[in-house]
Image (cartoon, rainbow over all chains, first blue to last red; front, side, top):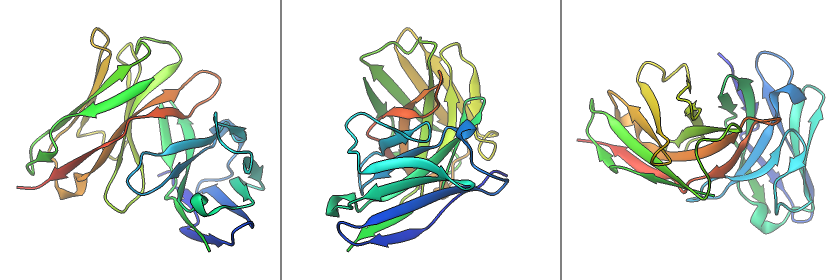
Amino acid sequence: QTVVTQEPSFSVSPGGTVTLTCGLNSGSVSTTYYPSWYQQTPGQAPRTLIYSTNTRSSGVPDRFSGSILGNKAALTITGAQADDESDYYCVLYMGSGLWVFGGGTKLTVL
Amino acid sequence: LQLQESGPGLVKPSETLSLTCTVSGDSISTNDYYWVWIRQPPGKGLELIGSIYYTGSTFYNPSLKSRVSISVDTSKNQFSLRLSSVTAADTAVYYCARGRRSRTYYFDYWGQGTLVTVSS
């Protein structure tokens, strides 16, 4: 069974930098999984932040960036703001119309 | 583009959950997209249920495959979800979304979600 792993929670100070990661139980995450990242605040639908590893979706501030770090996909927030406090989900494409979600990271800005 | 989920908000245990997603602003009959159902139990993470291509080809999460059916009605620009033999564990917010399938693979548009509660 494919499991996508994320840190359950993370904390960052306002103005600070944080990197959230996305791993795969069966091996390394590469660009061929087309990693994407979504931000979700309570009661709202997810918002697309990053796709194809490092492409920002329309309207997403450039303080959000995506990359591959080692064997994981990564989402870095530079200059964190209070309204970045959200849940962040990584998604990997497995082929044949199927994606797998990570368990999500709850980011606290304090 | 807008996606809107509709259907009963309350379903009894052992019955079948049925939801429809109406797509507006673009045709569902395009080569570049899958049409996707995703759910989120209260306080938990997101889970892909499955996807459909406009031709009717379907792709299901293996953990739900035995209970799921997704269909498409191109004349109405809608796609639908049926989940059979529901239990309380199927209580969730159900989202429909559009999944890109050309040169990249991600969800670019989401519906607002609809809460379905399984309870007698």
